[in-house]
Image 1: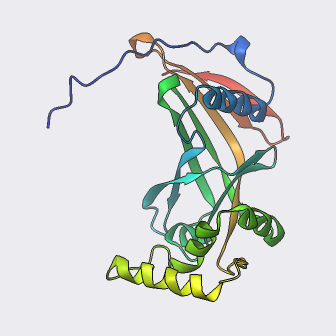
Image 2 (image 1 turned 180 degrees about the vertical axis):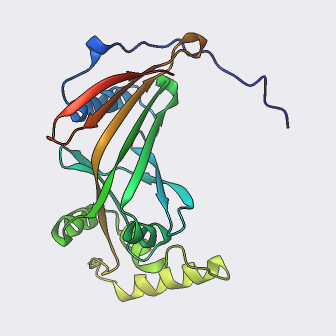
Length: 212
């Protein structure tokens, strides 16, 4: 399949040094709110990259569920493939692609588990069906058929008939503590605007323009 003629022009915006906010967290929040205002589908979807003990990378889409100057929080099964890789190597990269705005944000940093109290607070806010799903799925494990999942889900429905589902011991949140943010705005002639915030040894954020 030849895709060499499949291309788009990037002309929807520009991004200059004078547009940069002092804090990358404020800049991220500004762009995220613009993505929400544009009514993009799941603007909190991010591609999370991890690596195993041999340095082989893997990616998956996860949903950002909290953001502050502490970092970016997502949730997962603690026995999943990503969890196993994070135990070995907590360094990650995350990418947000807001294609209708012709923007990307890349975040690199180190992951830490959030507290059980924080995980429980979020878990209790989830729909009942999603709570059951956390109990029903042995995430990343090999299964022979979907019927196994459906049978496990039915079992959980019977077990928690009163609708009070406890937090599974093997489920909770991770927080990415950022070390860099890169903001990318598509421009014409493939001369895109790219700015990176890097955290220096003194804890200050430094900004630089990158060539596209």
